[in-house]
Image (cartoon, rainbow over all chains, first blue to last red; front, top):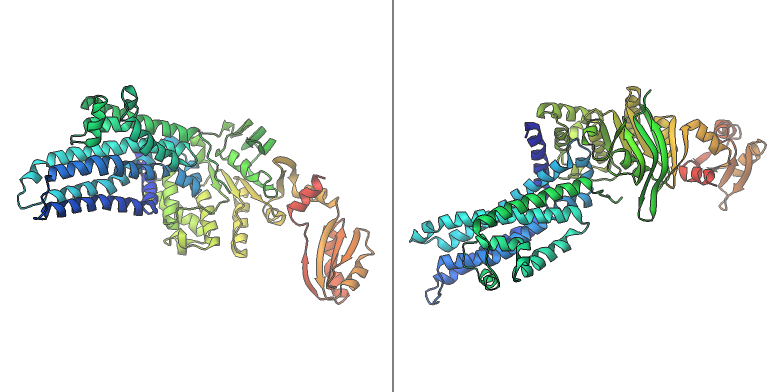
Amino acid sequence: MPIRSWREIRTIAFLTLDTLFWSKKTVWVALISGLVVGLAALGRIVADLAWVRVPFTPSQAFSTLMSTAVIHFLVVFVTLFYGTALVSDEVEGKTLTYLFLRPIPKTKIMLGKYLALVWICSLLVLPAIIASYMLLYLRVNMQPFLEDVGRLAADLGIVFLAMAAYGGMFALIGAWLKHPILAGLLYGFGWEGLVSYLPGFTRKLTITHYVQSIFPHDDPAGALAMLVGERTAPGEAVLTLVLLTAFFVAVAALVLREKEYILEQ
Amino acid sequence: MSSVVQARGVSKWYGQVIAVSNVSLELAPGVIGLLGPNGAGKSTLMKLVTGQLRPSQGALTLWGEPVWNNHALFHRIGFCPEQDAFYERMTGGEFLRALLGLHGFPDAEAARRADSALEQVHLMDARDKRIGAYSKGMRQRVKLAQAFAHDPELIVLDEPLAGMDPLARRETIRLVRDWGKRGRCVIVSSHILHEIEAMTPNVVLMHNGQVLAEGDVHHIRELIDQHPHNIYIRCSAPRRLAEALVGYPDVVSVRFHADGGALTVESRKPDAFYERLPDLIVSNEIDLDEITSPDDNLQAVFHYLVK
């Protein structure tokens, strides 16, 4: 892609990043991310109390945190709030005109915005995971910490992939619908939450299924899902997530290009 | 001179609401005033011209090319929207440089053009101040600046004088006239006749989504002048003034207000009336407090034209 194209996408990304970061949503997202770290801290405190006989290791605590609070809640929450806002905030704020009246294709506008989305989600989620890992693992005996660092790296990669896919889906919902939050909630916590546990082919119509298929941790929800069906092979799951992401972003770009946005006076 | 904007049978509707109805226009370089009361369809037509909306029917082209999704055309178009909306955390300079960057200008050129535009709207002092801290007039000026900073051939301004102080209004009117003289096509909308008259004699009158009249503003004035024009005058001696006025053939009626300090005159020739009024005031030793015309806005004009 020519340098000028990247400049345009980068400008859009920076504009969007600034708008998203300084919005009220960031306060809520930071609180929720902080809550995850708080849960890790609580787990550490409980584990360190000599008079409490806790049957879990740092690895088990971290696995539970990742498979419940992070994958099934934090990732969906963060991508929902920012993804649906990519276009709808500019429509509501009536600033979309300024972007649409520039000589750049609307598809590039969506690409720039999507990059900002991935950027800000990574900024607010990945450090929370790293902080949680350190809180749970850092001890005098550093062996478990060092042993599981590879798994942490894999977790970060999986979370990034999950955020990319969910972000694409919510960006599409935000570009398409006038009031996207409700639809996003229904999709993120309704469809994804329920359908991924149904037997048969329908579970493959969720992002959750593919994320669970590559998730290395013991996952109570995933174990439940396995009772009613198999996981997809990891390689296939990663490829599907990448293709789904590309598909959602492409369709979102198409919607942005073809839809008329009425900025109410 | 070849036309810039060509609209043929253009209509735009939203469900049951017809915002623009069967508009056919050809606009050449120069300044064109788009006049109409609120809800006339001016903003919708401007959004159609600038490719923000797609016609429901008909064809609209710029320089012979369709506008919708034709992003290459936007190098040549500048638009100043009516709504007061910005990226509030950006400074005026950052805002302009970012938008100029999206036009493909390198950083140094974008900075130069941004400064030049801000200079022209007298906002250089506030260049590094956040737009969120700007006054209403400053916001309107920076909005105007982003419309012309990239030196477009077609500049579309939706109510550009709203919120501006008299000095800024004068400067903006001067800018618009200069652009017209330099061969730009400038479309300016307003619901205030004298604002448009100060910028151009060429007007298009809209009402209920339709073009009612187009051409020289004096011609439209003549259409208006066929109907009596109301002028409200508050002065020290309304009855003495009325006595002086009733002898003139263009004066249709005189009504006195209940408080005894004002009168409303109905005249068929408002220009002639305004010309003779100062002499009458002076010769009859009358103190004038206020003179306004409820008809000096387009609501009344359209009321007459659509009757």
